[in-house]
Image 1 (cartoon, helix red, strand yellow):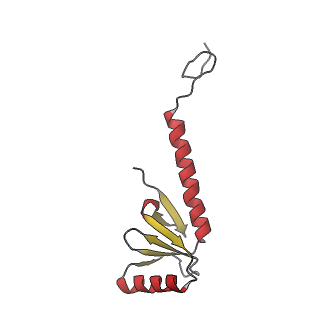
Image 2 (cartoon, rainbow, N blue to C red):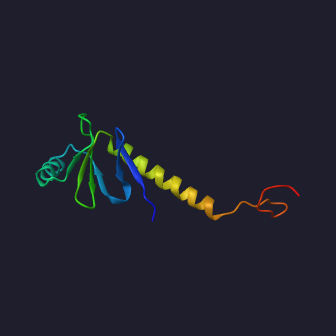
Image 3 (spheres, rainbow, N blue to C red):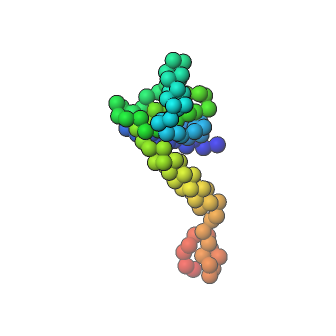
Length: 108
């Protein structure tokens, strides 16, 4: 299993494998979630004093406040998934010269 990281802004990183949800902070239930996490000591504020634009919930019930939009964070996650899958596919298939069948790519 590989470790995947998500930049949540200002050089702060969250383990992508532990993320359960990335949500907008505007609704009343999300505001309650944030306050409950603060009371439990499970709130991590990674906004550097900026406006909270996303709330990230982890599988350990930690709540991370981010100044990055949820769509941006999700896009970063998807980009990493696609890049990771492409890298795995590239590593699995050795390159062959079509005419000679050589794996080194040099002409004979």
